[in-house]
Length: 103
Image (cartoon, rainbow, N blue to C red; front, side, top):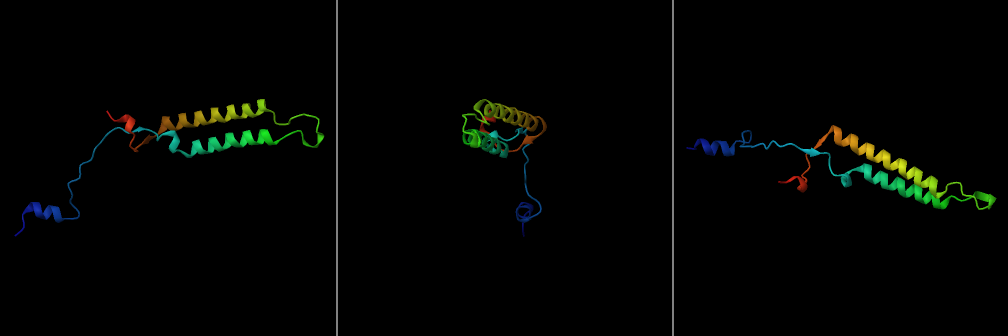
């Protein structure tokens, strides 16, 4: 004869599951997102393009994509990235474990 405790342990449907309800952290860390990878690749692309593009066939020392223009585009990319992260943090929660939130 089996005891009720043994029946419960062998029953696949009924388990002693304890749920831990805790408030999740805001979004996952930035280094885990595809946004950061795309941002870094875009910045590298702008810097390479700025370095590679010269004055064309004119050879008059002019530069079509000067450093100041490249840094302006990088500034715009940075603003876009910051706005994107801000919107992500404002609207969602992550269930990833973040050791910084352990108390």
